Length: 193
Ligand code: SF4
Image (cartoon, rainbow, N blue to C red; front, side):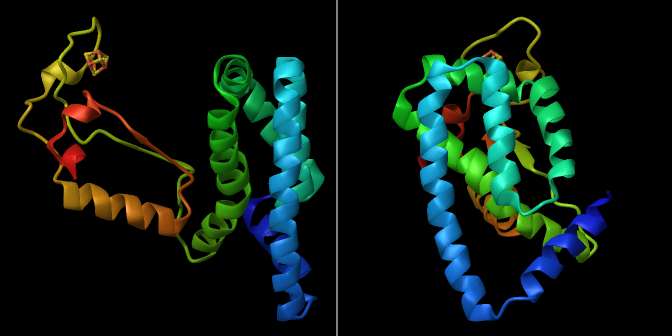
């Protein structure tokens, strides 16, 4: 099943209901998504890496509105891309509050809520990435072996206004994950702003 067919599938389901009903359903669904997510997060520290991947996949199957067979690709992605490992390690090493924050941004907002914006852009002929990486500066107080940062001039920095605009536009388009890289981002002049 291609991306275009998934969009069609989601749209057809939405079109058969009146708008007001859709709004009530949307709000109820968001609350259900939030509390279900908190419930599965409470299980993360108690279960294996494989079970964490299954929980994330089931969660996406329940709430994304995509046909279930499409989600096997997500399970494979989580298993092979390293996200499953990250989720497993975070469940053991990171505080519950930070884990909640990450999961709500990554799973709920990124995988499901913003997916609709990305689908919309796709229909309009665009291609919005899931993730955006920005290196606003190459300055760094360290010289780690193999790092590229020292090859760039410390003067080659991105202005704050430009980074601010790119981040806002990315959010509007449905980009789910924005990573600020270096050099050392806290040495960037724009970090004061
Ligand atoms: S940017 Fe990161 S990897 Fe590179 S030298 Fe600085 S601390 Fe090391």
